[in-house]
Image 1 (spheres, rainbow, N blue to C red):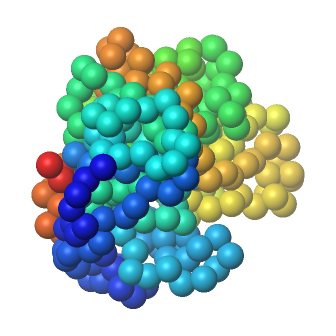
Image 2: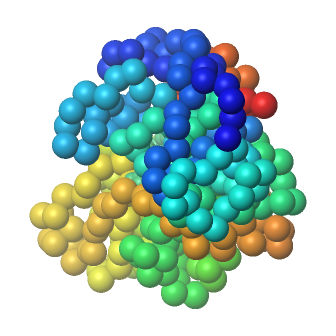
Length: 316
Ligand SMILES: NC(=O)c1ccc[n+]([C@@H]2O[C@H](COP(=O)([O-])OP(=O)(O)OC[C@H]3O[C@@H](n4cnc5c(N)ncnc54)[C@H](OP(=O)(O)O)[C@@H]3O)[C@@H](O)[C@H]2O)c1
């Protein structure tokens, strides 16, 4: 267990956007029963996380500011709480931190030991940190919700994004024939991830690409893109939305199975994803890396052009 009682962290003391984030000293959290204390090497951010209610409250709605963002971590086990099994100090691990607790934009974070898995060893901590939220979301969307079958046609809306770049790769790994959408400049990159076809947002006629509709549509964009996604899904096909719940009425009118879910920790799936990385079948996609003290700029970069993939905070 670390003897240090304070650490540097990125925190917000009031609900808001990146302007609320300050780099400051904070108490090192103590691992509770069943929890591990992880020395953070790298933590990835999700641009939208400051808009999620659970970033700011407990599950029953109580304010929990000051909060620490960033819910995917790669690091080293630094201590274990009572009854935390299966891990030892020094183990290199990665994991998804639930949204109603402090995240990993800090030198240390605690989370249930059962939510951690051995990190992929063929890549850096920075690359590993891009997986536990984004790749797990893509995995659960394709397997647990869409139940993708080999040979099915999959459309990934937003194929260059944090989740989208993994949805493209994992849909291909699972045997799907993948079409992705996104900005014109990301075409070659996304095709390199395994998309057979790429449709440019605002230019291409998506409907012409699949007149009968796609078997599975994963929408990571929302808004007008989600509105258009119902008709791109074939009758009896599956539409998985990630930014907001779908319209049950529109889905029913078109005979589409539309669903929304929130990713949940799953160490067994993370072990599977780590194996795919170490086998060279899943490539971590790092958009940009910022030192922890520049965490506010990392969140602000959402609104300026940036390379595809996940934005990461480097901690040690
Ligand atoms: N339900 C869950 O469990 C869960 C988990 C993770 C994330 N999410 C949600 O999923 C969404 C995506 O998250 P993310 O981290 O992947 O975000 P992201 O990295 O910002 O990815 C979104 C991607 O969509 C692209 N895009 C924007 N407009 C588009 C359009 N009209 N057509 C096609 N592509 C377009 C973006 O391009 P530019 O960057 O060039 O704009 C970006 O590449 C967010 O709403 C997030 O809250 C949900």
